[in-house]
Length: 96
Length: 161
Image 1 (cartoon, chains in turn red, cyan):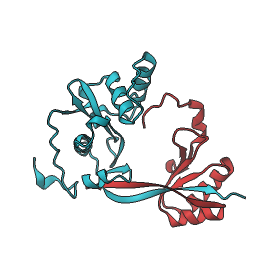
Image 2 (cartoon, rainbow over the protein chains, first blue to last red; image 1 turned 90 degrees about the vertical axis):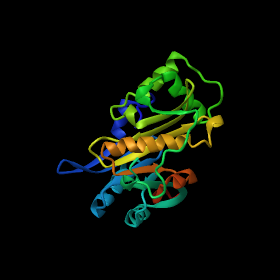
Image 3 (spheres, rainbow over the protein chains, first blue to last red; image 1 turned 30 degrees about the vertical axis):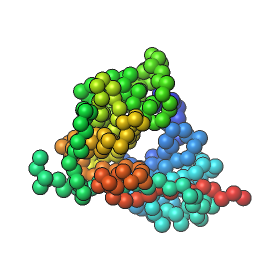
Image 4 (cartoon, helix red, strand yellow; image 1 turned 90 degrees about the horizontal axis):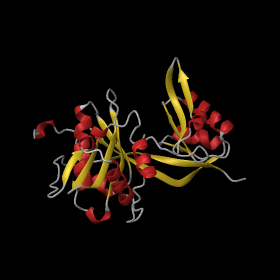
């Protein structure tokens, strides 16, 4: 990403990495402001998803979360009291 | 151009004719005032452009990110002005690239400048190993360029009690 001059090094603590055997398997991160919504990026592992949502709810109980199309993750979020909004960001690809 | 190698596009990978405009990588002409001009006007922030040292330093800082590669940013240059700015994020050794940001100055839109810049940037990342390019957008312009629907991000919020 671009290096934004508004970014504060102290805000790095809000970015949460999920690792296994030294490899990053998932990440919860904000875009511009840690007080705003977060993104979840992860491998397709149910236990990992559960752990990520538990961690997110514990650390950011009042924040929104953005996820890719993933029914399993949607169900986990539902169990934690989340609901889907109308906010959708489509992704398009240009593939070899 | 060897079209048989153009598996990357499902539609057409020909660089459109941009008569009168030069399509060049930012590494060839790195000027902070022009980067600021095209991003400011291209993102509809108005016609008055502030070229103060503070603003230009912010643009220098923005483009100093370790993974930012000026060879993957293409600009459309009209005389000495940058009028379209189109960047791909890509790290050599990985397979995926991301289009972001794309901005064209209003009076230079609808001339296929962004398409030309993005195609050039795709060629650059392909040459360095990229196998796929993504863009977060629902605009038809990307469909017309050959992008296909892939996925969507959805926002979830806590239910109000």
